[in-house]
Image 1 (cartoon, rainbow, N blue to C red):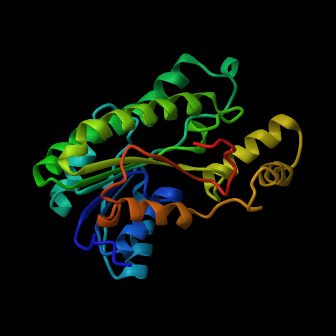
Image 2: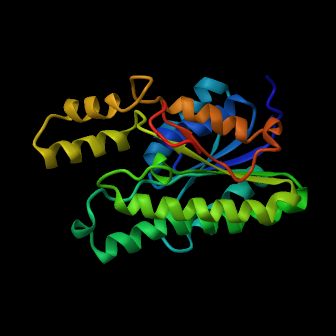
Length: 263
């Protein structure tokens, strides 16, 4: 299937590892011109080399920490300058710290709000004028299955990602007539470094092995395993495409059936 995005300009944040890297790779494989952002220059270099090896395309790289005020606008501006605009935004950022409410400080909430919620809003503000002028744009936020079904010990993530989902739904209504679609993708338990960190956190708190935590998670997933980053990336590539022009305002789980609700 030709997704119709060859030559489209895509910015993917948090793109040096995990879900962000998988999304950047999938878009590059479809022929998009990709700009990758990460706060680690070393990780960015390695990720860009992997994409070049896989696609014979050299992505642009932009180092920058989305948790820093003003960074989102700077990153978007640099990406647009390097690749000639932004048609597709994949907004991804590291997850907030784990813990229950009484374990977390005011600064944990403040810093996480900047990283998880405000960076996505500010990235959106930076790219929508170019999209509306062209009458074509795609915005995809990587959130979590927690927006459908809150997860234990992740109260900050549950709260902020739900807030981002509300923002995405609202702005999808505002931008719909402009040719710009806005969607969120909601990964469940997926094989990334973030998942390993969460497993380690829970194992230490419960006094059990990391393998026991994985077994507990997998027992809740109908397909019987955790996900692979490229499985989420495939959906992101589709939502970025011409084929998905009539899909907007959605929050789509990619979780192996873990979410038990109907909608």
